[in-house]
Length: 64
Image 1 (cartoon, helix red, strand yellow):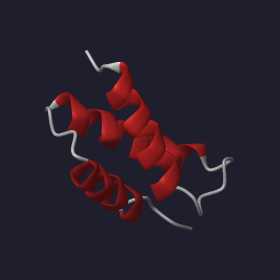
Image 2: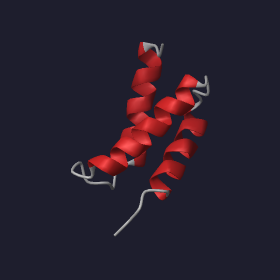
Image 3: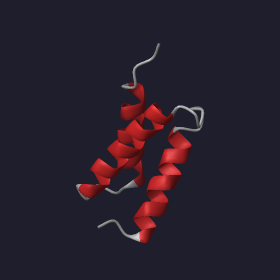
Image 4: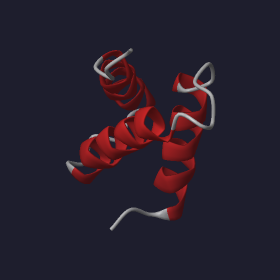
């Protein structure tokens, strides 16, 4: 289970990495959030690792 401090960190990283992604781009934001949760659930909760995982997930989002 993810504690409150980690949840706050995940939210911060999501907002930071997706800053330029419009809120209506739900698919992209969901992909990043999913990757963040996956990374954190493995116990990898350093801010740098989470940001790297989030940026990688964002770069893999298909564009039209």
